[in-house]
Image (cartoon, rainbow, N blue to C red):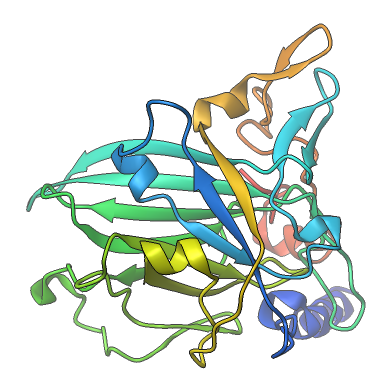
Length: 294
């Protein structure tokens, strides 16, 4: 019986959406989500470094960036009609220097289920983290991204990172990330008021590319895809909020956290279960919360 379970799990994983991509039609024009600072935030580092997002097929609610919200103490949801970008600032020091991580988080209503390809990651409230690491001089040296489930992690150097800080295994070749191919370097130098663009596939919410465009280009149009094409795009304002707001979601009669605050599931997103990952992976990963967002 164990042998059969392992065999079926292997087949499911081979067909799973985590290793395959949703197709973006060449004629598709993305919608640009542009961060908007509250009064007094304009010019702050976390506002200047905040990523812009390129998304497709926004007729489907699950492809829109939404705001985590609450209906009651225990029930939370993501509102696709109220976009929101959350930021957190963390300072750290290594044996070499001091740095700052600017951490940005977005969420979607769900990753919908598909049988072919089999979407093992199907579930509610998925999110994406983008982290811009800045040196003591205020220059971005790393751009990292991951799902809030902890998967698809990739750390990409920028052209401000000193060559002697690259790992010995760094080849300069494109980065392969579970079916996606990302550029090996994010180029900030020489770009007028650079803005980071994060392009995201529809349905499975995978990051297609991390790149930088000049602010005036981003403001006027959405950058083209990897082929260098450009298309006019609608722009949606993306309000910028402190991450702490996620711990105080208002509902009629009180406030609650987007995350469980006690028990074994503490710090995981409420209601972000991944039934297929639980069924097919938890027993060999020894993790009842495998694939759940945090």
